[in-house]
Length: 127
Image 1 (cartoon, rainbow, N blue to C red):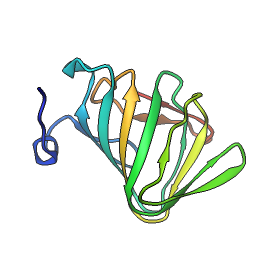
Image 2 (cartoon, rainbow, N blue to C red):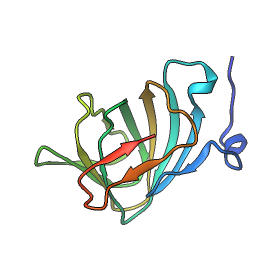
Image 3 (cartoon, rainbow, N blue to C red):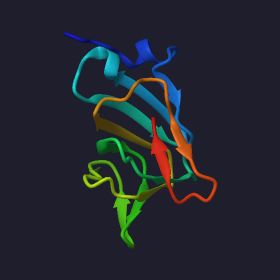
């Protein structure tokens, strides 16, 4: 059984500055699980253009306010909202306040890598 507390992660390589916030990685590939589990902070005022060609993801918002844009639609993001770009959907995440998300990735994240934003903000790859 794997048991971790956020305080166990905060001063380790599992606490990754991902570009527009922090990703605290409770489960990563080296843990041997078929998915990753992160506690992610998206900083207020940021805009992240995201696409994960090698992962699927599900995110559950537990704090903060923001919005998602995909396929020309705007979806408000607030506590209790879940989203899952299940077809490697390009999307834009805008944080009005600091947003806290619990995220699951499959296959699992390697651990220390972060987003690589393109200069024209139309695509990002992950890990």
